[in-house]
Image (tube, rainbow, N blue to C red):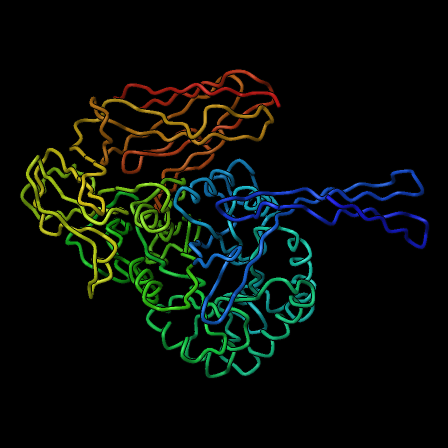
Length: 570
């Protein structure tokens, strides 16, 4: 590494490292980081020192090519996330953020849109370290108000200051690939919108000429009528897969981004019959079906976006709404109490994967095999009734067996229906207690993976599964413990709703709890909660001393479960 020294007018010397020979490039697959050490001297006396973590990478957005990172063309496999941490609330906890990002990485996700405000420094540092690209977003409102007391009342005075602060704070972070200047602002629908967009974009270019600017556009016709879509470095469209080709024919940039996509709604392991595609569908229990065919009036199923991404050149990927459920916006039950949490997440409020997680994983995580079948197979009273079975897999074909009898082999392929391109579906299966088993076949037709789901018996015991068994004894580190109500043979009991109580002893304490049910009004802070679809997640926190932490869960009529964690000093 080369070093240069600069002597300032006041006699202080500034030393700067400039060269990294044969650098290893930063990417989601190889998030290599370096540290620059800056030292300030008065003569030979060191007066100050500062270390800056950075990564080395190159990227381009080009007409006819789209997005490339380190010379490799790729599409964003991204999610939008709010800033909250589910049952922990809005205060940042690095261990909780790391868990979220670990789950997203396993999904195959490689990018996050910080919806719709600048992110916490801890999140950006983790994205640098773990390898997730960032669209760092600034505003949800410009001059035209969305709500009475929104940012519009501060926009003229504060927009430039806030934007400059955001760019200055994160322009040294390798994970930051682009800046967003707004989301679904009403100013799209007037002639002043493109003027404001250009002014904000020019500010960003002035402060950071190395990265492009985008925003989330949701008023397609007005975006072209008034011209805002043509102003942006990267035109980003929310929920417009059916109009991508039309947009590309009009856009001078020659590419576009799915800046917010899907908004499919589902409740973890809740299944509704008959199984049909629907929008704004409501049920008496305020849940949404996990067959992943229900969306909002403005949005789509995942497969519709997949098809548009695959069929339309120069569409550079997507950012799904959302990675995780969040408190608020319980569409389609916005006005139907007690729903108070979103249904949009690929993972629920407790961080448990929904079925949809595996639909995305089958597409996004090309390094690992995926085979997931749904629904569960415990349906007392549905004997003989049609109960479709779906498989989400990155294998091209699979065969379904119900109680050992083949229901035929399905193969993904070209189809007028997007679902048939990305899922394997047996729509005419009749329910019979026992088991369903799917055997997946590789491209050569050889059996490559198997998954089986059995009908559960009576609830028998609680099984605790910790995401990690070793914690730092720093008073902040967390473990997320999934509690499963199982029958005597270890099958999950999907209709179990028993209340589970937790006791924590030793070198840690109880922190929070959640079951992923958007209608649940039990406290996140008390160490008991009813299971939802047979599961919930309890969060425990390390204390300040090294040692052992015991976590025990009990419930009426169930054998208790326990797990021991170790807390270690740094």
